[in-house]
Image (cartoon, rainbow, N blue to C red; front, top):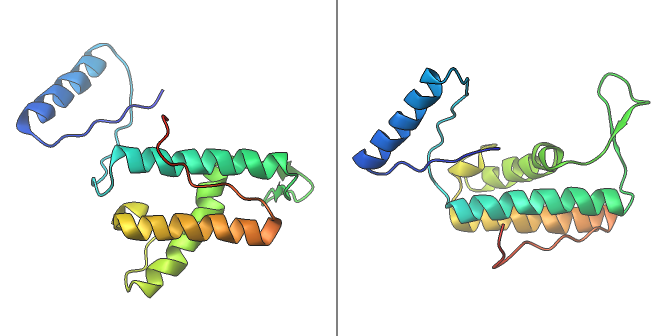
Length: 141
């Protein structure tokens, strides 16, 4: 199960440090990733919920499977990660050129820019394969 820690204060840093030390002392191995907080946890949850729903919608609608890069006979289903890597990131890359800062990292975007990329993704998939997945709003994740 994935965990996320937001550290804004010295106290929060101490609590996180204590957690890390407890894991080390218990012999558990973790990989920690540091991410600049540029969007809220809710925005991040919305983005990934969209990826999951879009993957499900694409698979349910019989959208073309993804050919395996080493064996084109083997086909892969759409997943949250494949939607993110193969669909979302190219839209982000293209639109970020218009903003004057090419990036594949959505944490480099403002809230408005992230919304623009999400809408472009939804519209693009709808136009290309006829699958419409609305952007989640006001939902529990």
